[in-house]
Image: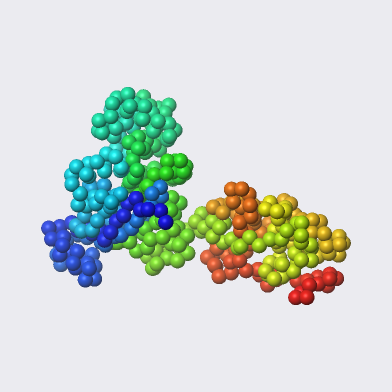
Length: 417
């Protein structure tokens, strides 16, 4: 497992004049509402712990008032926690000196806000390079790095424009460029796309994922939108009343919601955009073109309870064969395996989302899951795709009884047929 870039341990934030009393009450099991009624103390965050590995995206998802914005502001020291630790490369933001905190903010961490926070009287380039100016970087270096950041987000042609000349989505790109220009190790993003209309918002989500592939930043992303969380997060935390109610991958949260609160959120989620081919793939069982025959391939299908198998020529995929075509090969072509090959077969990579498999699955053939060298690493049965999309995971990978292989009457049937 990769080393944690950010580690948060047992963090509480109480707003009021007696925070430690409220912390102790929470530890004894009192809830947020009771503490407010009895003490006047407001619980912002309660007993939150998590780790974020370097170069990953950790999404905190919650509704208004859940504590997510309070949490992200504690991560860079804008708000001091009532108790707990926030470690960035071993330095505790919650208790470090003012000088150490300044160095962390200047050299390791940057923040992108929802409402752009652009200076209307400054050019796009000046806005993008503003964080560098605060750091005391020379004008020539600011211009160079500001232009590089704008180029990354596709706005280098607007460097001398004013923000008012840009659309909302373009203005948010400037905000993102400003965060990137300082070359931070950690990027805090507090609902950065929340003010954008749906189409532009999706474009920005895709753009962030594309940037992350090359920049490999450690990102803490705050959102109230579960679809956004599931799309972006390597891991996701669902937050309610100041605490994390579930932390996991998108697949873990959708497949196994921790409680009724989470279950209500994921009930209407498009599972096809959450689960991938590798989550429903079977082992890459196959036969070899050079050494197997139609009869041995049929025997393998019966042993595996499959009605089709992939055929390899060494490590390369030669095609796929079905039980019915193999039966014909035994009767008419002396059991020649090659005569039954279907060379036009469906193929995807393991990270392909299930919504892209609708068409291939409808064709009825098992789908080959391949790696970057085009080797067979798994096989997805069509029924497994539709079972996962319907939420019926118990039947994944099973061959339905009415399509299970049955030895034809006029073949030289294997002993187990």
